[in-house]
Amino acid sequence: MSEEARLREEICRYGRSLFERGLTPGSSGNISLRLPDGGWLVTPTNASLGFLDPARISRLDGAGRLLLGDKPTKEIPLHTALYESRGTARAIVHLHSTHAVAVSMLPEIDAKAVLPPLTPYYLMRTGGTALVPYFRPGDPAVADAIRGLAGRYASVLLANHGPVVAGESLEAAVFATEELEETAKLYLLLRNLNPRHLSPGQVQDLVSHFGLTLPEHDGHDHG
Image (cartoon, rainbow, N blue to C red; front, top):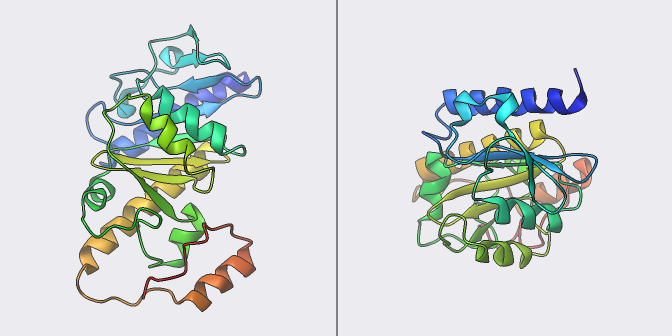
C-alpha cells in the first residue's frame, strides 16, 4: 500500500470513529491531511465522516486545485489559513461537536482563552483555544480571522459553528479535538459552581515539565 493510500484509509478510520461516537452528525465536519509534496487530502463536500470512501477523498495540489476525487469541502479557506499560520501542522479536524458548539455561544467566553485550565490534558493536547467570530460556512473571510491569530493557536472555536484543530499528525489533531470537546462538557457541567481551576503555578509546571507552548493569556486571570 502506498503512503497516500494509507493516509486515505487513516482519514476514513478516524472519521468513522468520530461519527460513530456522535462527535459530528450527518454530513457535518471535515478532515484534511497535508502531503509531503505540499498537496492535501481532504474530505469531500456533503460527505458524512462515518461513510467515507478512500478512493473518493479529494486530492488537491499545493494551490488548492482539485486533482482527483470528489469536490472538496467548502471549508477549504479555513484549512488553508490554519496550515499557513501553523507551520508544523500536518492535519486538521473540524467538527460540529455539541458541547464545544454550545460553549461558543455563551456570553462570558474569553476570545483569547475559550476554556479555563480545568485539566492538565486540556492544555497538553490543545495548548488553549481561541474564539473566532461567526462567519457563514465557507466564507473566505474566516481565513483572515484565522491569520489574525498569528499562529499562536492550534485549537480554534468558530462561534455558533464548531472547533477546528490542527496537529502534527491526524491522530494528534483528533485527540486534541476530543479533549476540547470533553473539556467543554466539563465547563458546562460545572458552570456557575465555582470549580477549582489549575492555578498559574500548576500551569507553569506543565509548561516547564512538558515543554508546552501556550498563548501568553493562558494560565492568567482564570481565578
